[in-house]
Image (cartoon, rainbow, N blue to C red; front, side, top):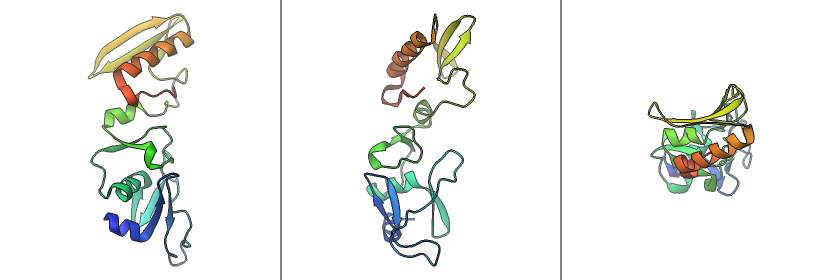
Length: 162
């Protein structure tokens, strides 16, 4: 799909990230109706155009910049269905995972912290090697330390959500 084909089929609001159909789609959708749905397992919005399914954030990039993204697209706020262009940025796979939401099996609901006896251990690794490994007396202190280290290591991709 080209940017021109996309713009012929859909309108995109860069402030909200919402795509809307430009014309009626043979009883499938009305002109002006929001396109796609969030049936993807991780909450990404999917849009079917010309019998092909696309991730809405990748279509947003194509619509605005006129070319397919050259890398992964990261949602800066971590909300996978928030496709405002200001919330989307190119990222390597690693940068994208640094900004991912906390996994549901996380013991404390925060990343890079695990129990260590009666203490809380903060650990970061890169390339299979530990680059930060320290224990703290309580969870709030461990979270503060984790946030400082993450900001240094991950820069703008450091997640503040957990």
